[in-house]
Image (cartoon, rainbow, N blue to C red; front, side):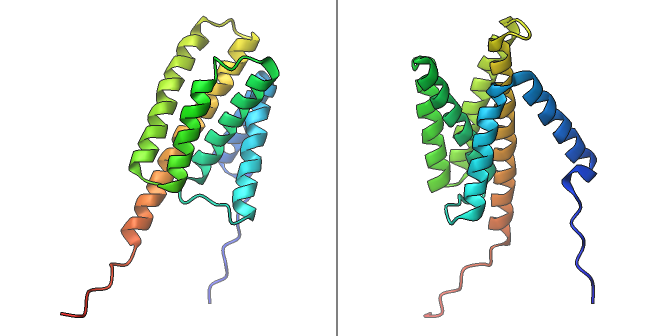
Length: 176
């Protein structure tokens, strides 16, 4: 009889340490621009883990993108500037709904392309912002969360493909 393998602490690996250091550096530099979507993502992940409200395969991508939408809404409400964010809110929300209700390559590609195009636009804007400025900090956080969402989309797609590949074949029709 084999004993169950002891779960290692997430910070005991090089990846865990690098992730922790990267998260600390991002939150230190970006401040509330990273804290708002970070906390929203954690709350969404807890909601998905502790309730039956759970998307299939793309949980991380939906949580991170949903947190990004929440951040856009909070920023728009607090500043009163909706023109800069309304398109993002609508398109990202549509992508989340599509990915949640019909998880698949089409929805994942749509959301991935939206994030990639937005990431490109954010990087272009980031190059013209002064380092340390509020705009630079916010754009840095946007870029980080878009990269995280893209990685989560890729991971969700791999999980979906593995689940489909290991699914038992449908029962043969025995009426012939």
